Amino acid sequence: MNALGSRLPGVLLLGLFVLCDVAWGRTWTTIEGRRSQGELVSFEENQVTLLIDGREYTFPVSRFSAPDRAYLMKWKAEKRCGICRETVGADKMQAGEQIYHPACFTCLVCERPFLDRQSIRRDEWGGLVHTEHFRQVPRCGTCGRMFSKKTAKPEQFFSDGRLSCLACLRDAVTDVGTLDAVAKRVRLGMSELGLPKPTGPLTMRLVSQKRINQEVERAHGRGSLRGLTMTTFRTVTGGTNAGTTYTHEVWVLAGMPVVECTSVLAHEFGHVWMNENFIEASPPSVEGFCNLLSMHALQKETSKLAEVLRKNLEMSDDRVYGRGFRDMRQQLNKLGWSGLIADLSTRRVHPSKRRR
Ligand SMILES: [Zn+2]
Ligand SMILES: [Zn+2]
Ligand SMILES: [Zn+2]
Ligand SMILES: [Zn+2]
Image (cartoon, rainbow, N blue to C red; front, side):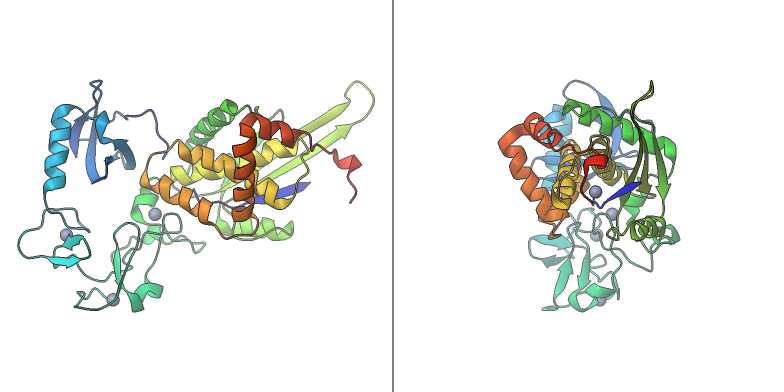
């Protein structure tokens, strides 16, 4: 058995506009006349983020009908609180460019208001804490969003030690049906690149962090992974059944939001392809290539979460996953996808011919 691990940070867009029948928020209309219900989350630069059916989607403002654009411009012109996004009157607090309701301008840990000249840490999502309380604030393991321990729901603290913000939890993949739907989309993206479906059967399982770590340890791999691919193969020489057959098992951390799950599955399916082709390359090349597939999947997503996950991928200082990714991206820029895939395919070494 060979076990190849992977680690990954990681919204699935079901078409560009999702129609749903949730009776809240506002009805939005695209320039083509398609309508959907959603709550406005943010409008920054030219990007509009809507919360539709529990999931955030980001669209360019140009996609919206003229009345919607007028509504958006008016919304943007109003002074809004950086925390709750409601309008702010004369009674306000200011930090940098952003204004807040006095009641919102409080630390997520000690809940006290910020005073003049106190140093404040802000996460990418607008959350605020006193710098000295930064180490105590729970942060989402996926998106890095800080949240208040006191107001958090028990489900945000996973039994295996992981933490999740409410937004990521709302979109968590916890059943095999959803996982299958994510897998279908990931496969589609890979076939665009010229990577075929595996020839052998593939089973997917949603598991805890503890379970993945145990398996990784057993295989002398590296810890704290979000997905794991195990391929077993059988080679028959001679006779009518000559040839190699494969069976794949892909483990995915349960409870990741759909976008992160997409990224992790793309990475793992990269391993599946490499395993079936017996591609022999260094760990940074293997993990780097699999991370390229994650990046490709994440580039199709327009949410802020996808942006955060892309950044994590690009900035990772991990010797294998981070540097490997950047090296392989250089190769990709030089060779293109088909060239890169062809190049990797030449590194096929059947295990019976490997020197180890
Ligand atoms: Zn990997
Ligand atoms: Zn507020
Ligand atoms: Zn504090
Ligand atoms: Zn989160």
